[in-house]
Amino acid sequence: MPLLNPFLRAFFRSHFVSQCSPVQDHILLVPVTEILINTRDRESGTLYSELAGQEEFLGSHVLRIPGGASANNASLIGSRESRGKARQYTTINGRMVVIKDSWIYANKGL
Image 1 (cartoon, rainbow, N blue to C red):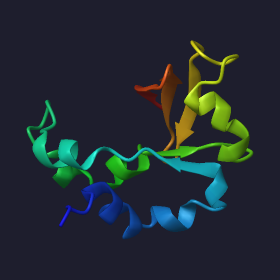
Image 2: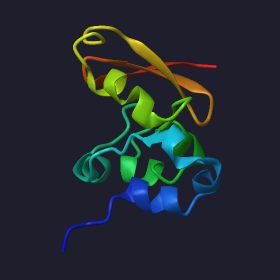
Image 3: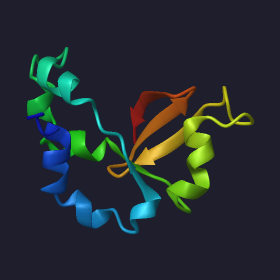
């Protein structure tokens, strides 16, 4: 039986679920289960599966997309006209991430 993703388990038990309304204005950036279970944070040495339950980690993985995710979907996945352009998005806890060429980069927090 496959393991339940620690991020998803923690997210759906958190208060962030009620903050993601309307749901079409939010996108979850869900880390791969194997990475969460088998990888440690470089600074603290803590497994990401343990960090996944912390509010800062959860909030940093929820994007707010004004006007709805479906309206901005092309810019997120890289349509022809947006390919190569970096786009900034705000997370639910106020941090900024940059999406460029299907890669997500952390930016300085606000």
